[in-house]
Amino acid sequence: LPARLYVTDIGMAAIQCLRSRKIDTVISRWELIDIGDGKFLKSVIEAKPGIPTLAIIKTGDYVQEVAARSPGVSAVFIDDIDDDHFRNTVCQLVNILKT
Image: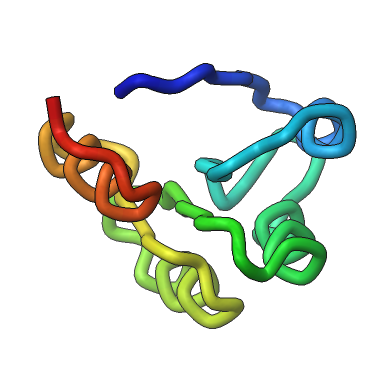
C-alpha cells in the first residue's frame, strides 16, 4: 500500500503518535501490551469518529470479535488474515486504488 506506517505495540506510544501526526487510518490489535479490552480503539473512535479503524483480534476468539464490533470499528480482522484480503479491505476503507 502507498502508506507511511507508524508501528508500536504500546498503546501510550500510539496515543502520542495520534496527537503529533496527521493519521488517516488506525489499524490496531484489540489487546495492546499496556491497554487492554480494546480501550485504545474505543478512545480513537470516540475522539475521531470519522477515521477508519481496523481491529485485529485473536483467531477464533468470538468474545473478542463481538467486543471489537460493538464500538463501531470499520473492520475486524483475525490475526492470521490473508494478505490479499487485508490489503483489499484497507484500500476500500481509505479510498485508494489497488496496485
